[in-house]
Every structure is written in C-alpha cells, then in structure tokens.
Length: 307
Ligand code: ADP
Image (cartoon, rainbow, N blue to C red; front, side, top):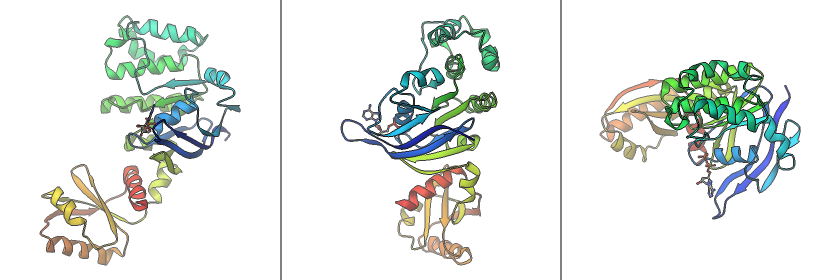
C-alpha cells in the first residue's frame, strides 16, 4: 500500500515555550483508518492543525498525496476534509443550508457526492430545516461530517469527533467512519478514548508531544509485557498510599472502580508476595483476577514504565 501521508520529524513549540510536538514521524497508508490516541494536551490538535495547513510546524517535513504540506497547501486543501474538534458549522444556517454552503465553497455539488453521504444524510433529513445550532451533539457531528465529505476528499481528518458524544452515538459514528473507508477514503482520527483505538487499523500513541508507539491495536495488545491483574479494595485511596512502598517489581494504577497491577517477575511467587504485603499493611483485597490487557492498559504500562 502507498503512503497517503509521510510525516518526518515534525516539531512545534508555542509562544511561552510549550513543546506541543517533538520530532513526530510516522506514515499513514492509503485507505486505512489511522488513529492518533492520547490524553488531553498530548498534541493531537496541534498535529491536525499542521496536517491541515492551518498552522506551520517549526521544523520537519510532511508529504501528503505527493504534495508538500507547507509549499502546496492550496492543492492539499482541495484534497482533504477536516472535522475540527470545535464546532465547525454555521449555527444560524439550517442543516440543508450548511451542506449547500460547504458544497459551494469546495466548488462541488451535493448531487455529485450524495451517494457518499447518503447513510448519514438520511438521518439528518427530518431535521433539514432546523438551525444547526439547535441540533443535538450527535446530530451536529453527523452534519459536520457530511459537510467535510461533500467534496469527496481523499483524506478525511477528524479531531476528537466523539468527545462529548453519548456512547451509542459514539459507536454509530465509528461504524460510519468504517463505511467511509470502504468508499476509498483515508481516515485520520484523533481520540482521547482508548476503547475507540480498537476501531482503527493502526494507531499512534502520543503523550506530551512524543509518539511512543505505532502499530495495529492487536499487535500492541500482543506485545504487552508482564502479568496483568485486576483487583478491588475497600479503600482505594489508602491502598494506593500503601502501594507506594510495595517492594515488588510491578506497576499499578486505578482503573475505573478497580486497580490494575502488572507484575514483571515470576507470577507464582509475585502474587503470593503481593497478597502477603497487602495483608501486612492492613489492606483487604476483595478479589484479584488475571485479565487480558486493553489498549488503555498498554498505553498506561508503556508510559509508567518509561517514568
Ligand atoms: P490535544 O489536542 O492532544 O489536547 P493540543 O495540541 O491542543 O493537545 O495541545 C498540546 C499542548 O500545547 C498543550 O499543552 C496545550 O496547552 C498547548 N497549546 C495548544 N494550543 C496552544 C496555543 N495556541 N498556544 C499555546 N499553547 C498551546
């Protein structure tokens, strides 16, 4: 497969010295769903704004569909679609008027690309005369997606499209992204939700402006090191305090209502040692069970191990 995007050592520092991106390099293949996964402040929007030629990098080079992002930005803007993290529609225009506006702006027509957006547009039809500002969060995202697709871009960028969207709409949105890929469009999407990473063909994990892992979600999970266990405790706060003096070769972190722990030594001795340590320190472990790692476990494990 050919590269849709090649990013070579891109860095960006904002006024005030915040290093938002540090020597970021990776390729996005044509027609894959590529995810940029990382917490708030990791640098995702900065990279998206550079990829869509809204801001300039301080250093580095990006080639997109054979063009240079800085020099050939005009050509590139015609070939990409962008769904930014912030509200991108005209709130006082109706649903229909927004779509028409974007079609005209891109010198395209709704009719020419209706097939591409039909599954999403059908859901918007009952609201076509409603002002965009009055739509629900999920519907706003669907309209913004139609507007970003109406000129049939070759690459679609979506910056945290599901932030603030309810879980059912989130799932539906990802189904739509997969169908967009099936129509030959490369999809580059960022998300702070690790569970969404599994819907991508490949992901890049980013933290503090540094990409520290790029692979398929399945490979990332397969490469997980150590023995992962989940347990509960009567008092998670005092448990975390006690864990600070745990002498075992392990890392641990709160995970929802549980705590996850990764043991790196022989589990037949590590587990009883852990239970003994907990007992000696007055901690009542309610249940402890081995579990398969999620992408989120992999992310935390890599970050914590590097600390
Ligand atoms: P993310 O999209 O992953 O939340 P951002 O790219 O928005 O991350 O931000 C990366 C870092 O750069 C953060 O520390 C953020 O506060 C900072 N930052 C983002 N935009 C600006 C800006 N315009 N000026 C100064 N700092 C910024």
